[in-house]
Length: 438
Image (tube, rainbow, N blue to C red; front, side):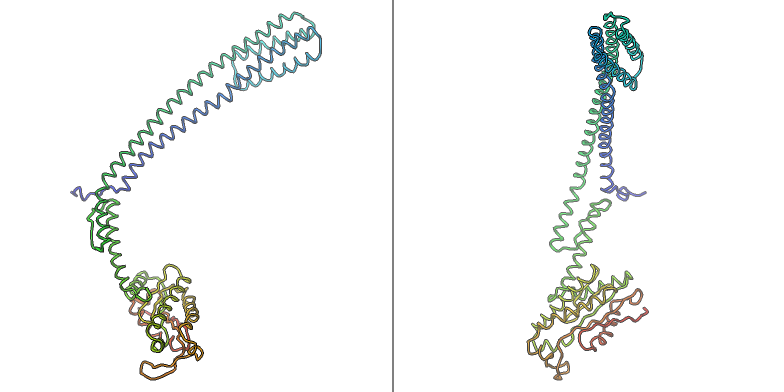
């Protein structure tokens, strides 16, 4: 049976996801309940505004219309003026139109009763206009019956409206109560999660701070001894990995050239080995200054160092300009440099280095040597000779997948073809495109 320490522990991310999922559920429930409640309230309000308020407004219009019809009919019976009959008919049609609108949204005995009473009122008015009956009291009594029907219809609708308003109040109260309850529950849960994580993480944070202190002091081998199983443990492991890489970086910095600040042989070999292991095609460009010894003998080692520094700057700037982030520039030592670039960028890089070097190199000679186009000096065998102005030669090794298995073999091939490049006059580059078996 596995012990409790061997059992898989829930990571901090999983704990956070579980805890905040619960918080999110409460929050979404509160929000959803609020939205649902507001939507229901909005539906009730829209229903009241569209139906009940409109119905009551129409009822008020019916009252005003029946009163106007009664007045115009009474005036006609006395004055016999056609314009009062015309006004009556307009209001009569208006009344009928309002009843039709009410019938679209409601029905019932009260509406039928109103229709019947209005028909009786219209008949009394027609008798008055046709002089069949001149008794205005009967018209007035018929109008009162219509108003009574309108009042009954209004009162019935008022009861419906009151019930809707009561329902809206109950819905609002319930929405507020449940929203507050769910929101408060989510807040309590979030607060509990916060306290739990502060308590859980605090001790590990102290260990990580101690590890940071030791690493800052240069103790790259320090291990905070935080068990794995959650993100703090993963972070501790990353600290150890980072410390190891810092140790390697420190070694590479010590290996870097103090003159050009470019990585040295350790970094170059590391990059070549890494690319060979990946099996990706690349090109290795070895750059070497021609006639550098003669120049250094004539102008001194300080000017020679300046020439090497300038060459490193030119190579680095050209590679940065013509390649991507995967390119690499290193300083093997002396006047030898290496560029590791993609196969597609070789021609642009090599020609760019030659062009920029050709532009810069004249500033390192005096006017007399520039005018003559050469300098006098001794070769490596002590023989006095005339040397052309300094140029640069680049030997390029194309590394396809499976052709090379070590950085040493690449360097050996470069040494073989460097003689071809240096044998030609002036600055040039030579690309070895021969296929090789491992």
